[in-house]
Structure formats: structure tokens, C-alpha cells
Length: 169
Image (cartoon, rainbow, N blue to C red; front, top):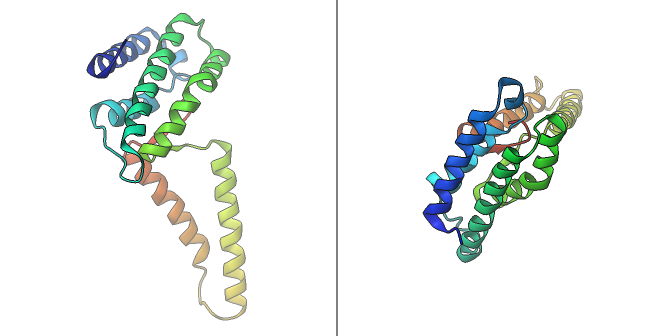
């Protein structure tokens, strides 16, 4: 059975092997930055989540490390293309991402959902600005810029804290 440091070393070695074998076109579909972020937090700098059960987190980390190793091995044994990359992501990485979100505060990039969220916040901010401007409660629009700044700040914090994952990232 693979446990502890041995599993950590295997994951790092397998990641380096897979990444070295991919050509430039294939690297577009391999989520190497997500895996680097996960290795950084899960293996290199693990921290207990004070809001969660410590024992469950430890068991979950072992399960997720095994899942990550399976994911990397599946990459090596699969004929790699865009469709297989998304299939592997759905099969393995979704569960890994959910665990990292729950215990380490990770966020998915969101893809088209992120654009929809920005649009909703912009429309909501615009409506609030229009309402308060028409009532002379404010002098200049402030809700739209405030919401956009909040979205950008949150994304920046996640990015610089290495807490993002997504397909192709």
C-alpha cells in the first residue's frame, strides 16, 4: 500500500514524466498549472483546515493523492487528444477539485460561468447605480465598479495564492 512520503514522491515523479512526454499541442489540454497548485498545497505545504474534521481531512488527502496518481498514470496510458483530456478531467479531476475547494479554498476558473457571473454583477450594479442616481442618493456610479473590483480582487487573491484549478489550466 502506498502511504505518506512515498506517495508524494510518486506523484511528483509521475507528474514530471507526463509533462516531459507531452508536446506543445498536448500541453494545451493538460492542466499542469492546476496540478502544480495541488502539489504545492497538498504535498509541499499541507495545512489543516480549522473548520473541518482533521481526521477526515487526512483520510481525504490520502484518497485524493491516490486519485491524482491514477489520473497521471491514466494520462500516460491514454492516446492523448482534446477529447481524451476532457474525459480524463471529468473522470478524475472533478473529485480532486471538489476536495481542494472544500479543504484548501480552491476555486475553479469557471469558464463560461465566470463570464455569466460578471455579466450578472455588472447588470445588478448598473441597476443599483441607475436607481440611486435617479433618486439623487449618489453623485456618480459606484456599484458597478465596486462589484467588478470585488470580482477581480477575489480572482487575484486565488491566483496569487495558487488556489485555482480547471480543465486546461
